[in-house]
Length: 232
Ligand code: OAD
Image (tube, rainbow, N blue to C red; front, side, top):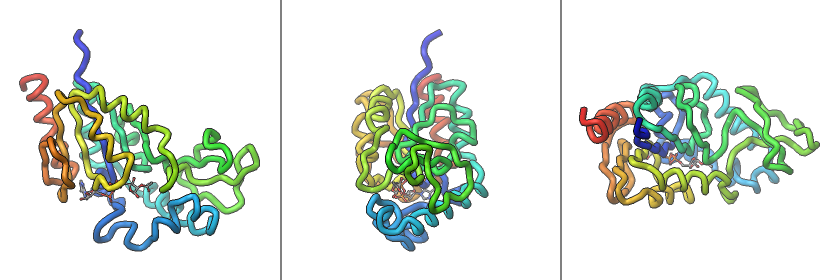
């Protein structure tokens, strides 16, 4: 049997908005009430660990009470017909909980912590709070497993390689303001069909834009993908 067409999704905070999780930018966004450099940077971790831990503990508690939305489920359904790959900037686990199988987290994961001395020493913490004074097995303080501003993005090469092999690229719910993640769009091969779903879409030349929420937009894109690749 011929290989399945590869559909690569690049998702951002808007993907989880219908699950009740806050986006970062814009009205009501997380960065309205928190200064990035005070909670999401290596300097913040050095200056005020308690504040950093509290910020991510709040995010983890919100996640514990959230459930995947129809948009996540549409991606799961597409896995039967397509080789689906998800590259997410989100640190939540809603893609996985909806049954999305191939998920690459560019900016880390809320349900994990890691040694502040060794980034490869990662532990699962589930939805519990991370407390001041907790240490990894190497004796260094445990920090959230999040890629902070000013840190390198270890998964970037893998993500760029994936995008370069896409037959279709679907971008969902991201303002495309954060690099290097936003530069992934440039990696798509010229023949790939491109969709962008966002009720307030950023500039994205060459993309077919659906100015809609994630669930509605993804249902429509699923239909268009089936038409395009299987003539139905
Ligand atoms: P942003 O908050 O910057 O952008 C969220 C996007 O989602 C906006 O373009 C909204 O218009 C859109 N949106 C809102 N509701 C939506 C819905 N129901 N359906 C679809 N889209 C919707 O979030 P990101 O682009 O993900 O990094 O932010 C990128 C990174 O910046 C994050 O990973 C995070 C942040 O600082 C770190 O913390 C390291």
